Amino acid sequence: MQVKIRTDMRLVAEDILYIGTDDLDLDLFESQYPVPEGMSYNSYLIDDEKIAVLDTVDARRGTEWLANLEAAFSGRTPDYLVVHHMEPDHSSMISAFLDKYPSATVLASAKAIQMLELFFPGKDFSGRTKAVAEGETVTLGKHALTFIAAPMVHWPEVVTSFDPASGTLFSADAFGKFGALSKCGYFGEDEDDWACEARRYYFNICGKYGVPVQTLLKKISALDVKAIAPLHGPVLRKDLGKYLGLYDIWSRYGAEKEGVLVAYASIHGCTAEAALAIGDMIRSRGVKVMMMDVTRMEASEAVEDAFSYGKVILAASTYDGGLFPPMANFLHHLRDKAWQNRKVGLIENGSWAPAAARMMKELLSTLKATDVSEPVVTLRGRLKDSDRPALEALADAILK
Image 1 (cartoon, rainbow, N blue to C red):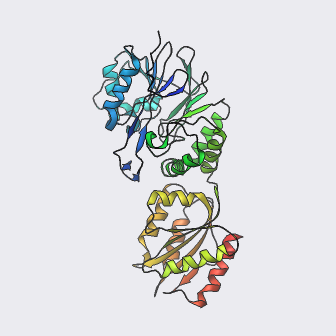
Image 2: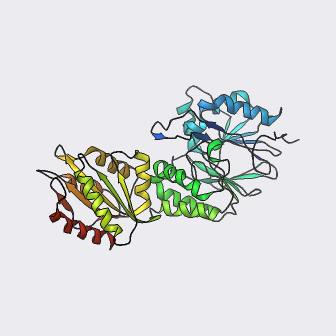
Image 3: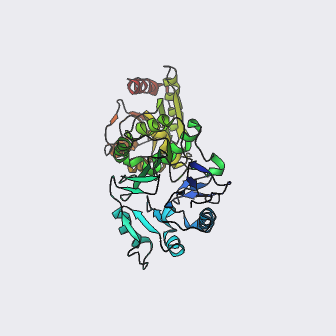
C-alpha cells in the first residue's frame, strides 16, 4: 500500500512529493546574504514500496516540516532518510525525525555520518545509519536512488542522487536559488527569472569551488536527467540545457556577459568622476558598460556582477596610506570566492601619496589567470583634461 498523497502538495514527478517549507521571516541567509524574497528549505518524499524522505529543513521551520511529513505519510512510516548535505539549514531535524520514526535508517556519505555528532552531541546514532558510496544504488521499488559523490559542492560530505525511473537528480545545494518558493514559484520554468538569484547564490555559496562543480557536471552529463530538484529554489524541469550551460560557464570562471564592468570606490566624488569618464569612453567604442559603486552595492550583488564580466576596471581612492576600505572589502570577497580568469584595469587616486593601485595589484596577484592591463592610471584630486589621454589608453588596452 502506497502513501495517499494530499492533493494540495506538489508533485515533482510521479510518486515524488515536495514536502519542504518556506521561510519568509529570514532576512539574512547564512547571516550575511540578504534574502528579500525569503528562502526555501527543500525536502522531498519518494512514495514507493519503501518510503524515502530526502533531507530535512532548518529548525526555524521544523514544526511545519514535521506536520508535512505526518500528513503525507497517512499513517505509514518512512524507511529511509537521505541526507545529501549536513549544513544545518538541511540537517537540523535529523534527530527529531529519528525520534519520531525510530525504524528509519539514515542514508548518507561516510563523512556525513561522521559529522552527525558535531551537530547532535550526545545523540546515539548506532545502528541507525548506512554509508552510501559513489555509484551505490538503493532500490525503493520501481524507483531507486543511485548516489553520486559531490565533495566540496560546497562541503566535503556532499552527495547527490539520481532516480532513473523519473529522471530526477537530487542535486543538494547545486542549482540552488535565493527566494521562497511561494514567491518565485515551485518550478523554474523561466530561465531568466531563475538565473538572477541563482547566479548570486552560486557565486557566493559555491563560487570558490568551480573545479568540484565541473567534476559533478561531467558525472551527471552521462545521465538522462529530466528534472533537477535542489535543496533551495525551484525544481527545474524544462530546457535543462540552459541551466546546465550556465553552471558550466560559471564553474569555468567564464564571462557570461559581454562588456566591461567599471567598479569604483570614491570618497568625495573625484574617483567616481574618472570612473564615469572611462565608462563613457568605452561606450563610445561600441561596448556595453556596467557601472558599479562598491561603496553602496551590497556585497553579494557586487560579487555576482564581478563574476559575470570578463573585463573589469577598478577605480579606487587612497585612504590612510592604503586602499579605500570599500574597495579592499570588495577585492577580499572576490579573492575568497576564487575570482579568476579576468582582465583588469586600474585607476587610483591620491592627493599627495597615491597607494591604491599598489594595494589592488597585491590583492590581484593572489588570483589565478588575472592580468592587469597597462597603463595604470594615477589621478591626483579632480579629473583634469591632462588625465584623459591615460584614461583613453586604458580603455583601448582593456578592450584588446
